[in-house]
Picture 1 (cartoon, rainbow, N blue to C red):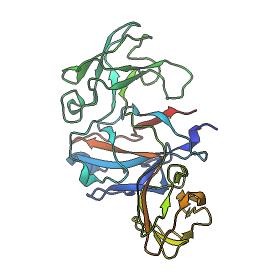
Picture 2 (picture 1 turned 90 degrees about the vertical axis):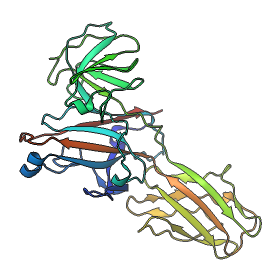
Picture 3 (picture 1 turned 180 degrees about the vertical axis):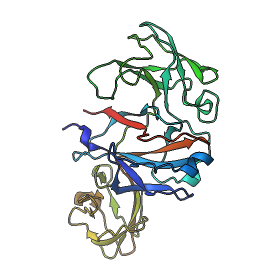
Picture 4 (picture 1 turned 135 degrees about the vertical axis):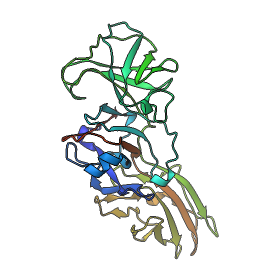
Length: 345
């Protein structure tokens, strides 16, 4: 089985607010539904438009594939600029970071529009960013030497009409006001115009996280005898749907039975034994948090012995930053379009 579109989910973080604790871990019960009003950011009211504001929201892109497949070469980008006076950028997050961990200077990714028409075989393009803070060398620059960019005149990412291609920026882009000149590694395969189709030609910088798959780290044992878990031959199994970011401590109360505890508040793990597979259930999604195979237990365990490991879900965290400049005009139907894609076998 391969990964299908419906298995690529966007989820909110556990804390959604405007304070330092905003963000944190992934909330498996808080899906972001595409196209729904205020699905990530709240509305901007008059007082906020007049004063201006900056808000952060953390989301997670999860591979909810029941065969536990890996999403290879993932890419995340903003497909269109907001039609309002505000602007949005993306940057990478971790499984647990909060707004308090945002220090500035993160590599931001965003969308610009093509300034002048370009012919096929061109080796450079000029784009216009929404604000000077997004230009190369500025606080939230979205185009850097070596970054991957996507050039598209499609109305939607999955549109059957229009063209698109991917390139790498060759050298630091040059800036004149809000216009950024980008040299490409290679040349364009297609011609692009500023007024192509409904939204014109857009140029997006692309966030490329590592392959998205579940994993286990930090496996360690404390035993009075020779008890061990053979993680090499019987690796601790991650479930793409059920696993979360947590550290698990298994503590033996006899030679064959144990209790288990998570470092995550609200997670209750049942006990188990070495004579059966251990698959504690994540009742939020009716799938295992992880699985330990019975054949992995070897040697003699004693009361008080422990096995500790950390599980990492098949997801990646991203931050979205929305900036509303002071005295921004009112607009209805304002939105940003975030796209999540990758390869599967």
